[in-house]
Length: 155
Picture 1: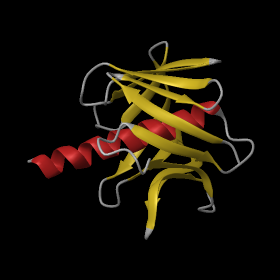
Picture 2: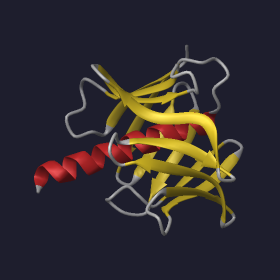
Picture 3: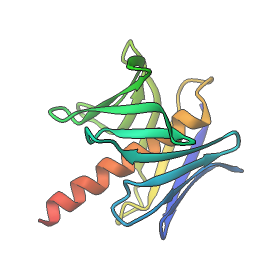
């Protein structure tokens, strides 16, 4: 199982092990609007009219995070249909998880034990065939929801 680190410096998050897998370049401190760049992909992430985050390629929606506001998870939707993946937490288990249709972990993202300010994350790719894109969007969602939780605590 490959392990990666994700580290945020300023408004950039780099996901890497020995080489950089992907970069998330945020437009602002809220960590919502972002560019997602990897070896064979370049996408924009931004909220849609329905407040679900959309993944855009050249302005065309290729994927949507359909939020379940009650449980805090997001089903990944493409062309109006579920992909079979969901990003969620699991009871009594730390971190954010990309799970398949059978609720098996595919990717796990957790705050590093040494990270007090939520800038350093441990990423584990459980499934051997998981793509860099799926790893990167799981990291994005983990940071997106973690920032939201921290802002709620500050209010």
